Image 1 (cartoon, rainbow, N blue to C red):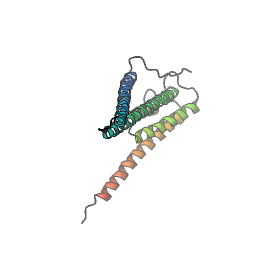
Image 2 (cartoon, rainbow, N blue to C red; image 1 turned 180 degrees about the vertical axis):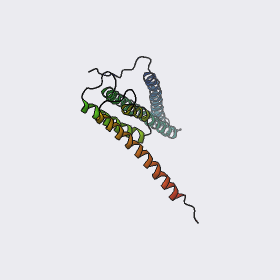
Image 3 (cartoon, one colour; image 1 turned 60 degrees about the horizontal axis):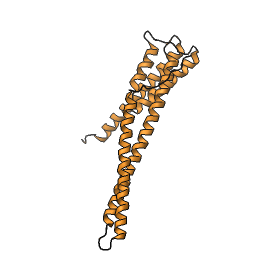
Image 4 (tube, rainbow, N blue to C red; image 1 turned 90 degrees about the horizontal axis):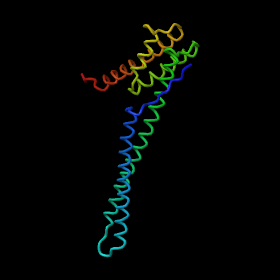
Length: 189
């Protein structure tokens, strides 16, 4: 069986985005260092000068340094989590797709059934997060019908079950939302 690799080339969008965000991160870290030096300098001036106090400037520089540091820390954490999640999601979806479809699809029916079940679960989860679930919908729908229809009925059953569960959750959420709106905005007679 062929292995599916998710390797981005040197000109890929993800690498360009990473370099840009690393640059922003370095600029924020540079601001943090400059503000720390300013706070230290103002503190040193306030302890050595006799007549003029730099206490307020020291506190302001320290406060700004803290804010810049927290923004930098949040940016670095968000970048790491987003990159890790995107990489894992892409690998999982690519592996499940290769197991279910294409020239390297698994010959074992039970494996394809589990792949369809996994894709259906991912589809429901991605739709709840309003993510990119249209691609997964199309993959599951092509398993049910069309020229790429899977010959095994068990695989088609799992794909249909996943799509039905997705539709049920989407409609029940909207129905619940409309009932709540009717309850909140009920006209008084």
